[in-house]
Image (cartoon, rainbow, N blue to C red; front, side):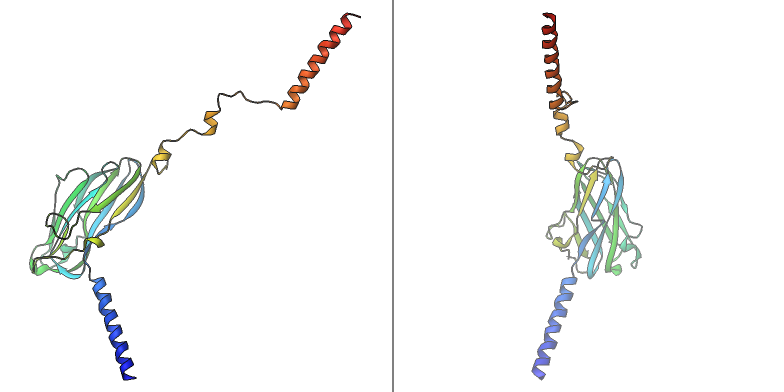
Amino acid sequence: MKKAVLILILSFSFLAVGARATEAVAYLTVSPTSGNYNVNGTFTVTLGVNSGGEAIGGVDGWGTYDSSKLELTSIVKSSSMVFSSVDGGGDCSIDEDAAAGKFKFSCYANSAVGEEAVNGALVVLTFKATSVGTAALNYICSGTSTTDSNISKISTVADIITCSSNQSGSYVISAADGSSSEEEATPTPTEATTTTSELPQTGSTGVTVGLIVFGLVSLVSAAFLKFL
């Protein structure tokens, strides 16, 4: 009996450790991850971080968006940027010269003393919808490079990001009339448009044949009476 109880305790311990290991993942967030918007309309996307319970001191965010459907009109530090509330505060630097279809930013604690576990916003992107279709937003992340997205521990100089857990965005852009696909934006001809060259039918075949027969009988009768 004692052996069975010990096995159960060990099993639950392993499950608890496994659950904590699964939760302890540092990744970058996107909010909202999806949405429906109209051409010429604007919307915002907040990019953030979840350090998975690890104390961190900085985040680099590199990413791409579909510039054929979206125009990035601004990228600014969030008013609730996660490092603003740590000891010593924090700030963000933003690459204003990023090429179309790309964004880059770095947010950080002002000192290593400010390292702590964080989960929240970093920067806010404002987009203008320019073309009908579905536009994607993704982080650039390899997990081994310092020139892409990183989640950094300053005290131990380690990048702890789990790239596969990073969130992404997908946004449906519709025409002003509400159509949400390229097919709807360019209507294809229907049967009604392919038959407009035909003359309209205003009566039935039986009535037309009856009138013709009646006319012929009248002509024959008139000719017969003429010779009487």
